[in-house]
Length: 493
Image (cartoon, rainbow, N blue to C red; front, side):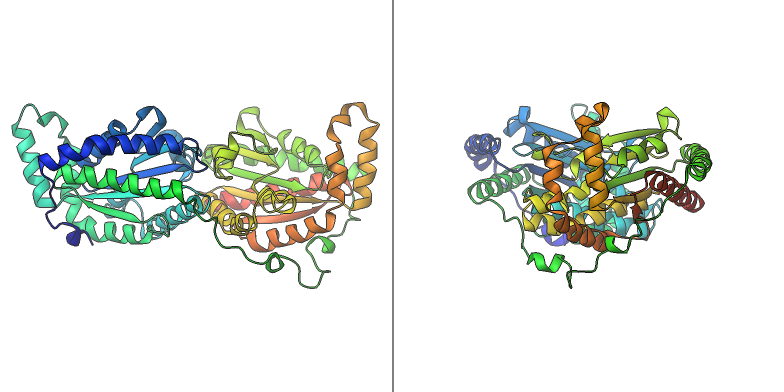
């Protein structure tokens, strides 16, 4: 693949000088049109020639309006990045709709780590798979993803580095990294070509650019960006195929995960008091051990309105030291959050290793309320099953303990709690007309939840449907589940 790209393409000084002025005007105009568009532009620059990559990134910022470009260079992982899944730093730096981001680096670092044996084949394969899936998710969400791999033959790089080192005016940009990359180049080529193949997805393929001649390289990259951006502005991307919602519904109209739940389960006051203390004390010990050993925890809570999520969460946080956890209340996405892929706001809150985060409502909103209320198109919520599975898989691979809870109550119990809230001064704020309206769609939520549990359950990220008609039973049940799950996670760590 790379050998074929090295054919000796060149652009003369005269051709370059003539092409650049109009090209810059066209790029800036397209960029300004993008600012009012409903999609972001992501430009990824990588290659075996560090100097070429730096020059191309600088050229993009020079020829386009740098005020509206964010550039992210992915070098060695920072301490903050090392404490989270690999792709966390990519997700948190995504541009919003109308924005432009340039990503540089990261790929060759993974190649180098694989060559040096710092990561194994399994980890490398997982990483390429997650990168490919992320790209597909962004493209399906509307993003324009352009990727350039800049290739300069080894012989040409050696000549240029030696020439630069002899020239005091140019030698300042050469350092040990360039020679190290060059020494690895021969052994890296098969891995590079494999990476380019495995991370080339529909709508996000790699463009291999011969970089021996800088003028040819810069014009090729700029013209490719302009052509792709102009075409995308004229023809919005497809949101992906849609299937009949019947495929994501129940079969016989009767069976569901929820109707197998025994809602009569309850605890008497004394048993509740004893078990609450027991499991809170155990969770406190496990959380300290998890902090010391760097095992993160992600707890996701969903359930019917008035099912008691707040009370359960307070019993969990009451077991923990204040600096070890965060509770993230999830409401309808804000105007800013709607400018990003829906998973972006959840990736932002992934805790570092050793810490715990509780999501009060979660990314499952895409499969539940957004599906049922029509806030997400069928193509969007239908592909969300696999997007969510990939998200949770990355957490588990990084060593997190992940648990997902649905607190289940009967319609009759829910109505009783609604009425109680209306007459309780400090709970009045919890009840709205929306809560009553949602009751009318109870059966739709049952079907949607059934599919969510069926399609997103895994050994490492389990669903737990908790009987919650009796609040004490639900609280102890959740605490017991978390302690047992965290014990298993610590044994694996």
